[in-house]
Length: 367
Image (tube, rainbow, N blue to C red; front, side, top):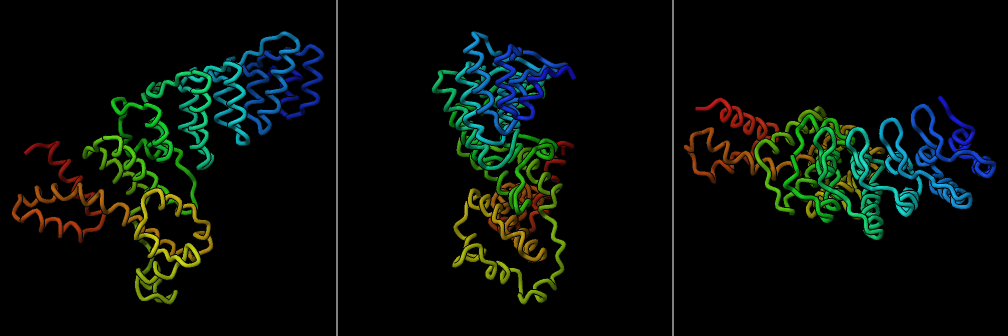
């Protein structure tokens, strides 16, 4: 409600009409009942750059100041909205707004700065490039971005990046000065709230994305504690990563003798089988594999078997390391540690989680 003709013209991305209205005296800073100005509306559209450039040019010609940091009723500036909604040519749009002195550190009513929007938003892997571009533009214009501030929920941008399973973004933030002293590892509930990427193979994306984030944090000298590992284990359990519902007869139905045969016959490239590809894969490679479009063209049962197998491979190292000493403690050190490792190596990931949960419960309840 309360929209002016200029609001409507830019909403429908009618550039000629908007230009005519502006040259005939329309107020470029008029706000509707939601506090939304024409620039707010422009910043949410596909033609954000073209329309915003036109608004600025005509305002310059009329010697008017276009309020680049005007806030709507939620406290959002046009820069917040461009980062959140504008899916096309986003880099050009934010570069224009920042060149016109938009404040990259302004916080809305939730305490979210534009950087929070970048970290909590996900249109695809290109969104991580937007984050890097955002820092590059701000640096070129001598803006200092606050990378460790907290929103009203106490979250830092780095925590949002991990919550949303974005290892590349974690790299960007750490390289730009994110301080691990301000970082709190997300809980399983926080991970469940995340807007993680939609990938062709969802389970594979969840596991490789989160473990990729853990790997990046470790490279920056962050040390996991048992609660962190349990949060990972519980999140994976809640998302069914350990579930395996495919009937073993699926192997015979599709002409396979056992699970490994499926891995050896499914090809992700002309000369590379799934089994061969996993021998030298890191988490980043698994993350790319999660976007392999051919997952959608394979029968559901073999896909489940492959996914279960690949996720198991990825979880194994972290879970096994964290279950060794708790298992040793649970058997009261009656076996050598090397024997415990051999036993742990033969356990399922769900069993490893149960071991860690048991030792956590004992530590809370006391001897």
